[in-house]
Length: 254
Image (cartoon, rainbow, N blue to C red; front, top):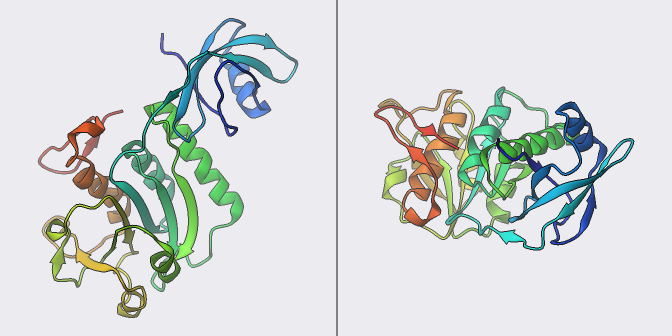
């Protein structure tokens, strides 16, 4: 039987007693977890360890962690994804997180169909989706979730390579050299405006061919969030990601 993975918002320490918050405890009660049962704990910052339920309180559980604490390094290169909000943004997070994305930034742009900036409650819900995805697929790093404008995103990024996907660009994504850290911005249907791209310099404006066409349908967002990390992460065989590329599309196996 698979040991349940549990995400903790607090810093994880070895050989310590942790009181789970009520939301996690409620889930454990529903799944009928008992004293002595083992859990696989992780804090979203690379730390993980096993622990056992030692006490079942009225509303919470007490967990005793193991003496050893494991640390998983971030995947290389560091990959930061910026993407305009679309209706299935939840799916973007679910598909990107298992690939080791460092951060996901919900970008507002001139052509965005959803013009209203996402509320803090929506961002918190996206964070929960990312954490839940990590619980399921085994990643120990939970991506950070932000909301920003393209120009601010470009100017504030410290990554060695910044990319804006542009269907009008003459440079292809495959023409770029590999980098230790990179940020990629994906616009809405029709892409970013020329003014947005010019104002966000210095960035590399590149195109991405989808089904033989230089255009970005609404579904490109979640497709690209898989394709681009695949392109960079598979250049490093030591990352250990289980990804297979068929003739069409990309399949992720966690």
